[in-house]
Amino acid sequence: MTKRAVLLTNLGSPERPDVPAVRRYLDEFLMDPYVIQLPWILRRLIVSLFVLPARPKRSAHAYQSIWTDEGSPLISLSRHMVTALRQQTDIPVHLAMRYGKPAIADELEKIASIPGIKEVLFLPLYPHYAESTVLTSIREAERVIAERKLALELVVPSAFYANPDYIRTLVSSTKPWLQQPFDHLLFSYHGLPELHLTKADPTGAHCLKIANCCSVPSAAHATCYRHQVLRTTEEFVAQAALRSDQYSVSFQSRLGRAKWLEPSTETRLKELAAAGVKKLLVLCPAFVTDCLETLEEIEIQGSDTFVEAGGESLTLIPCLNSHPDWVSTLVKWVES
Image (cartoon, rainbow, N blue to C red):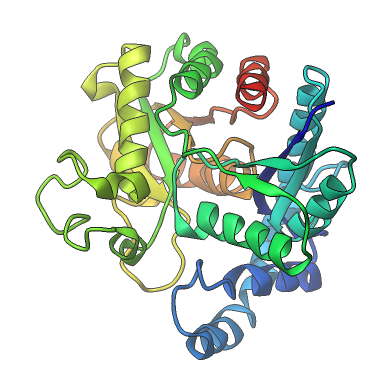
């Protein structure tokens, strides 16, 4: 009898694409101290006064543009992935979201009720480390286990941004698009405020504080999002044999007035169109499952921005989702 279960986690989604559901979701998400890294009272003021009055309506419209008969794409596609994974392993596999449902607490309770299970392989589905994605998920799982006195040991693997299995899978899933004529490949990663990088730097003196900080070896790289996304890009480019003039990197999904990682995807789309790029491919390796940030922000908004700036076509390369190579990679990881 297996003593291990697996809990895959992702960010989450509103239950419905309407304003009340989106408002509840945004409130839970943005009040997380790992997301907006300010004292509670300042977070509360920002979220209540500047975000919740107007943003839920805009976000609800965005969700409506991608909602399917199965509901939220992030949830439904994640469930399809888990179904495929379960068909290839006897280890119990569960799915949870950091915000919304299925909740981490509920899934841990289910796992704890399985006879013989003592260990949980807790796998946040983010290739790159960030406090606002990976760490907050781990802390929530630890909180639930401690508060509910669950007899479970949490095992958390390292971020897989440069894992050879992940890189091979990312390249193989992208190959059909790279084999078609294109002018440029844009790696669009989710953005982060620069403050998140410097705060996570254990040395306190490396990230964004020395020249070429992402290239100079440092203990900071274990928790440096920017270093890790650039490393993913380098590994991908080497394996896919891309020339240096065939690709570039940008960061999307900015929120608020803090200084975020640059260049922004919106700016880069306009620059590429102005430079004569007509057929643009966009890959979003920060996500393993298609979601609002890929399907609406890139495929819809990004396409409009690129075409209006003079481009001809923007093609979003799908995330890994339930790609057979990705499912096989997950099987290897959960059974090792």
